[in-house]
Length: 339
Image (cartoon, rainbow, N blue to C red; front, top):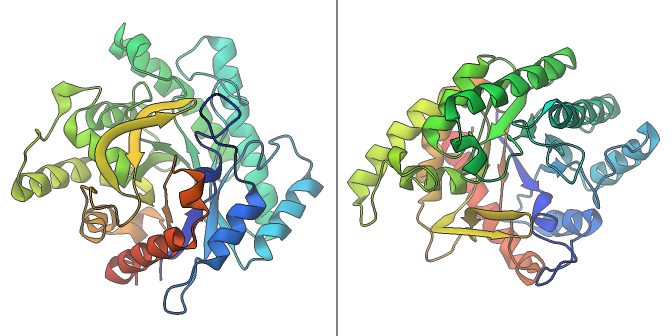
């Protein structure tokens, strides 16, 4: 089965807003237009991965309103793959590490995402993909007060979320990023996944930009696998070690580039900096590194890959060449591993 190529809609939202120094969000309609316009040697994107919050989506939208959105997406020839549940404080959810009220909010966000997934599936626009979550506990300070107990707390929340997902025929994928407590290093992420212990329902979403910072030990120096000034040989040995641990759990995959910097904007501060696919400062050979994650991808139910490039300036996102370059990188990954 050929891997489908998806673009993410959340680069139009993440880090955007009306705060000081922020650029305004880019509408769903415009993100669809930009994605649909991309073309490389007659090949185009197959679909999108979709963010379930305002201004793109009201998570409490009626079935009829959701079907109108599905029609809009389908009118571009796109399918919907993975969905992002609004699990964070200030959206629907709250910290998975929080008190009982916060955890109930977190679980309510997962329930909303499952409902929308079902509407999209019944409509026909969605046939594959996961629901993405994280711990929604920004920063590692609170977690570090009692790492073992706090990992258990997050795992308990995730386990309840996974039961909700399983009851709705869905799978959850926790995206490893250095900014989310209990998920901020490859080792802590692995410990959390193993403690949840529901691999058939809750797995890992690997993003190439974020997992690069796992190697460097940002926010967890004790788990660093590389030191600055590393050689190519040292890089690939470390990369293989990390991926071998996380790949068995990986059920969703983001193609991305990273320049080694920590970056953020708005509510998403101090996280992995996504770069353009052809950024001269990019640390990753995208095609080669993707192969480590995509080994035996069919066995883990992966049917598509998605480009993730958050927090680019709007001028970059509005530039057609940006998307053609991204699509070209995606095609190279698919042609190397996804046929």
